[in-house]
Length: 67
Image (cartoon, rainbow, N blue to C red; front, top):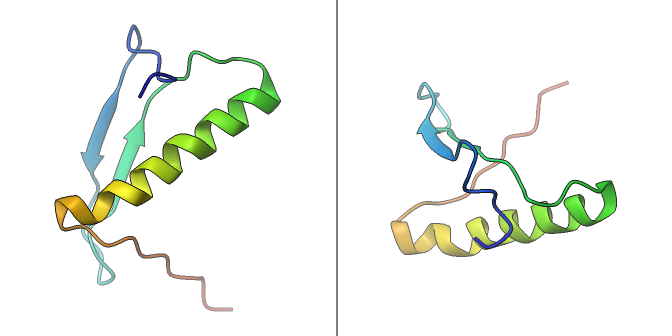
């Protein structure tokens, strides 16, 4: 993605499996440093990830904490 600073660490890794699935961690830095534009760019990247997940056979799942 053009907003990602590829001169710094970019990593995707699997975390320990849970009963709800296999968590993925996305670790990267953005080129944008100013807060409001940074949040906008980060939201765009996450939307991109959500859109592409099914192409890799992945389903996005969020479990809300039990209170």
